[in-house]
Length: 432
Image (cartoon, rainbow, N blue to C red; front, side, top):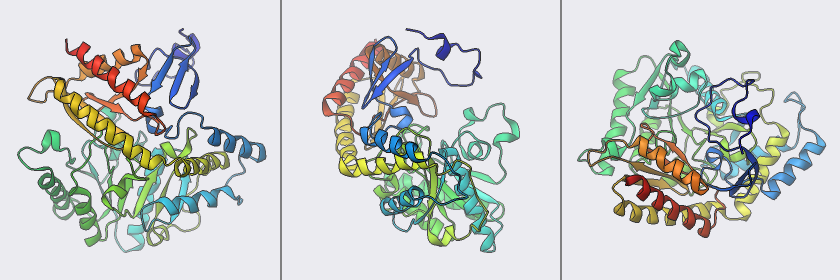
C-alpha cells in the first residue's frame, strides 16, 4: 500500500537515494512489516545500525526509563549516564583507547576525530596540514567528511564544499580488482608502501593523521589483506602520526569482533563509532588515547545534543545485550557460515565475481565476465527480485555492483538459510 505522505510528499527536499516502494509500519527483531501487512526479512539492518535487532526489549525499556527521568539538559551540567557509557566503551574498545566524546552521527564522529588530530599535531609543534585517506573510502556527507571520502560520485557538482585542503588518497587494499599477480599478502604490503610514499615524498607539510575503515563499507565491503593494517600502523607509529580507525559501520560486533580493528590487533590512536552503538537512536562519537585526548582544552569541542541521555541509555543497553547474548561470537559464527555458503554459491553462478567479508558484514560482487566488468544493472535486479520475495538488502561498491548483506546480529540460522536460498534463486533468475 503506497502512502502519499511518505513517498511523494511535497514537503520534503528530494535528495534521498532511490527509496523502495515500502512504507514501514512495524519492525521487530529481524523483521519489517509494511502498511499493507507484507513482512520482510531485514538483511541490511538500517545500514548496519540495528545490530541487536529492531526494538530490542531491553533497549526499548532503557529508552523509556531514561525518557521518563529527563531527555535533555545539555552538557553544561553533569549526568550519570554519559560517563557510564564512556567507561563501558573504554572497556570494550581496542587497547589504549580511553577517553570519549559523544556526538550525533558518524559524520560528526569523523569530523571531531580529525579536529582532535589537528590539535594534537599543533601542540606537538607540527602544522598538521595534511591527512591521508583511501581511494574508495566513505566517511560521511558533510564538507570535511566528503573531502575525506575517496569516491567522486558523492562529490559531484559540489565544488569546494567537498574539497577540504590537504587531503591525500592512498590506494585502496582492494585485491580482487587491483591486486594483479600479487598474492594478497604482497598486495597488502604494496598498498601500505604506496601510503608511505605519499606521507614521505608527495604530501605538503606535516600529516596530522591517517584515516582508514578497517573494512571499507560503501566502497564494497572491501576486506584488506592481513598484512595491510599492521604495516600501516607501523608506518604511522614510526612517524608519530595518529591512526584514525573509522569504525562507524564495522564496529559494535558487525565484523565478528567488537570493533574490526581488533581482528588485526590494531590499536588506533583515535577511533570513530556510530550506527550500531545506539540500537536505532542517533549517537556517534570518538574515543582516543589519553595522550591524544589531552590535546583538547576546555571549550575546544562541544555539541548541544552530543551524548544525549536517552541515546546514551540506549547505547548502554546495546552493549549489555551484546555481552549477555554473545552477539560478537554469534556474528563471527553466522558470518563464517554465510560466507561458506556464498562461496559455494559463487562456484555455481556466472554472475558472482567474489564473496568477501568478516562476521556479518558481507559483500557479493557481481560481474558480467572474466574481465570483471561490473554488473551494476544485474545487482539492482537481484535486489529488486529479493524485495519482491520479502528480503531487504543493500547495493553498493565503487561501481554499484556489490550486494551488501549486513543483517541484525540476532538473525537465526533458519532465517539466514532462507535468505541465502532466495539469493541463489534470484541470481539464477537474473542470470537468465
